[in-house]
Image (tube, rainbow, N blue to C red; front, top):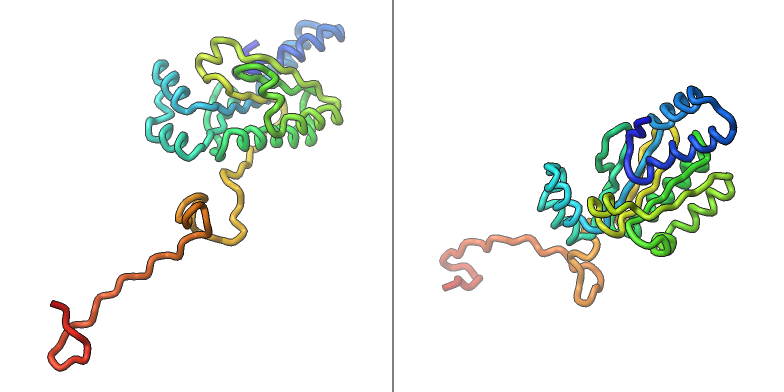
Amino acid sequence: IDTQNRVAAQGITAVEAVRMRDAGASVQQIRVRLEELAQNTHGYMIPRDLYYLRNRARTKGDRSVGLLSAALGSALDIKPVLYGHAGNTEPVAKIKGFENAVEQMFKFTGNRVMAGLMTPTVCLSYGGELSEMRALPGYQRLRDICENNKVEVFESVMSLTRMVNLGTGAVVAAFPAPPAPLKATSRPPNPAGLRHAPGLNRGPHGGPPLPPPSPSRTPPPCTPGSPLPCPR
């Protein structure tokens, strides 16, 4: 069976195959079911290091992450959310802050669990010690949602091959469900309606925003007999 996905998303069909085998399903029944799941398995991945991801992609001829994008993303701490489905991988969101991005990905996964999955399975993968992933924001909430909805969570350390390609600290979440877009906010909302970006146009020591500069004005022409002094 071609899972048509990568990393943790490949575990969805493997878990279902074992379940069906233990339930006494035939080979044909298992095959049909796994092909259906492969078409509806969604994997989301967030890397920690954009420079590393770019360099590894370039060695394989993939130039989808440019130097400027990597530089800006690293400088502004913007993390892409990569989406794997039906044999394709593409960025679907950009979120400020690694932990914030992971939290939103876990929240989205939890929402899909509550909406109902095609099989009660969520797979998580991490490029490092699993204790580090479990300490990330949103993880425990996702586990609680899965437990309340009788969904099993399978966690694994990312393989060396995937870790070499994606970098240490990358997080992947996968689940089987009908398609639905991931909606994420790149930065917190601005209730005051200010037009400046966070951290820009700030006063000294992070104080309130500086007022906009006054528009430049052209001085009136100097004419003989004018009460205004003429510049020299």
